[in-house]
Length: 162
Image 1: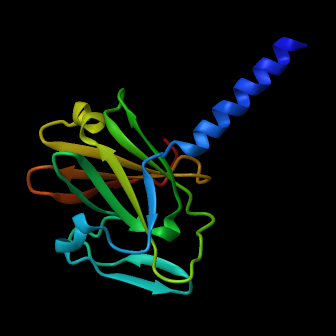
Image 2: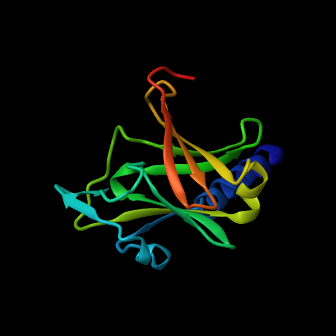
């Protein structure tokens, strides 16, 4: 019996830590300082925020410095998590587009990926980013961010699960 109490306490503590430890996705009602010189335009309509101005027309505005890679998106996108897939050498952003969150005013999501996490998967000064859509049978959009030119290109949008 004591064993089950200890195991239950450990499981509860793990869950609480999961909720407390930040997953690198921050909700903000302002465009973060690092993006201020990027001339980012957005539209707030019917409780949803979408980013409009992007040279590449990619889903995110992306920028990096010596500390981290920053991805900015409208808060309606409901980014759940990000992780590094070492095998495929890609940064994966998990996004739930099936239930967007409406808000009272413009909100944004900022994903911050520390340099030491993404640097090992950079290939030829380019970072492959996969936007993985939850509940859409594995459909994804692939972006390529050039660390030298700071340009993001949409590489592929899968219509079939991968």
